[in-house]
Amino acid sequence: AQKITQTQPGMFVQEKEAVTLDCTYDTSDPSYGLFWYKQPSSGEMIFLIYQGSYDQQNATEGRYSLNFQKARKSANLVISASQLGDSAMYFCAMREAQGGSEKLVFGKGTKLTVNP
Amino acid sequence: DAGVIQSPRHEVTEMGQEVTLRCKPISGHDYLFWYRQTMMRGLELLIYFNNNVPIDDSGMPEDRFSAKMPNASFSTLKIQPSEPRDSAVYFCASSARGGHHNQPQHFGDGTRLSIL
Image 1 (tube, rainbow over the protein chains, first blue to last red):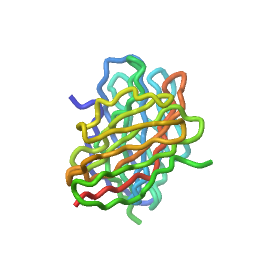
Image 2 (cartoon, rainbow over the protein chains, first blue to last red):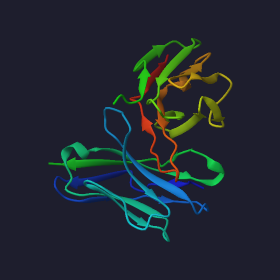
Image 3 (tube, helix red, strand yellow):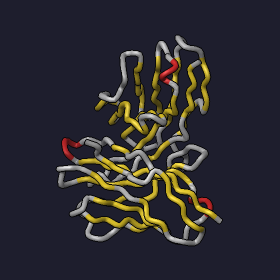
């Protein structure tokens, strides 16, 4: 079974609007971390935001916020006030604490296009 | 602050040749990761090191691949002999140790490898 599922291969949004990118995960480990990365067309991987499984509040980082619904095992990324520069691939990733591993497992990604 | 530095950025070589990819992690980070990204398989972890010691190499595809970390500021990923199916973008990433596994991995710009 896939550990990280991103069901939206592509998403479109108008500039200045908000957009939600979906991510669901599968783990039996009570302690885990969830990460979102952005990959522009230039290819680099940019860390955006982190949510820990024990965090009581949803993570926020500037225009990025994470809608964390633990019971549903979802960690959706919300981008507010979209900008043209937000056009990129977005990857959700999970790190499980079990065994002390530092491995990150990535989803397949969602390609976001921001239209002017 | 300097990020993760990878070289070369691009490599084109013929099948059967030895390929060496290089990585300098962020100073002070004690974890180093090698990933491979392809359209078919997405982003895959190949191997990671902690304090220069390989911890998990279960993602290394076969014996043609090897990775070393002779010191805290340098790592190599070698492919010998190379094959066309090794064509991919190879990323190096590093991270610090977080008490609650919350430290993100910071990625280099990647090496785009093409095996003819």
